[in-house]
Image (tube, rainbow, N blue to C red; front, side, top):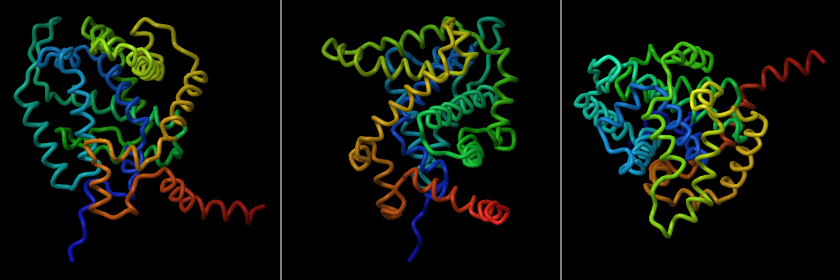
Amino acid sequence: MTEADPGLFGPASVTWQLHGDPMMWVAGVRALYLQALHPLAVRGVMQNSDFRKDAWGRLMRTAGFVGTITYGTTEAAEKAGARVRRIHRLLKVTDPATGRTHGVDDPGLLLWVHCAEVDSYLQVLRRSGYPLTDRQADQYIDEHRQSARLVGLDPERVPATTAQLAAYFAQVRPRLACSPEARDVDDFLRRPPVHPLLVPARALLWRRVATLAHQSLPPFAHELYGRPVPPPAAVDRRLRIAGTVLRAVPARLRRQLPPGHIMNAMARLGPGSRPTPYTLKRQAAILDAPGRARRQRAE
């Protein structure tokens, strides 16, 4: 009997556990805010799509891609990556400041999008109370060089630790700006067009999600958007409250939502593959056991 394919990451990975958390939706919105601050990257989006008319579709396609490469089979992940690379090869972006034309698959642009996403996922989940050690945070960054490879990047040139990721942001910071296109993204995310009947829901639910995602941005992003940097402790408290509320929704109900990546993975690999933070807690305890024993003997 052939063993089921665990995919690119598998149930033992940090990625497998982390991406099953509901705060990933807040993290995804943060990533959009952050990505918009790279003038050429955001122009690539605006010049090749009608962002205002298809922003929801874009968000769902990104979520679908992340779900597929995380929980799908190796073949499904590779096909998803090939499809993204094929689309990017056909798209160009013109820089109004220089008149130069760049491919959307320019490594510098792809690296910015990748790092903004990974940083957002990691920052929002850790600050919202998801149990993750520093070692596991580094492991998560390293694991995501796989997703970088799928979109066309050389994994060896992609940050592999939180320290390398921080160094990348320090390096790229001078090239970031709040362009008119970034303002368009900001306006959309704060007040997305909805059916009149959904306006109350937008005010009650979406605005809170968008506000929290924006508040969780790094200080340099707040400065570029021209807004005061909120007190980090207050933002952490709001993130923890949101995380507590969302995680209180039974996981079996959350996993029923389309497109069902987690349910499909559990059907393929068995119920023991379900994503849960307790898996990471258990792994951390096992790794820390030798050090804990040494400390006890020293005492």
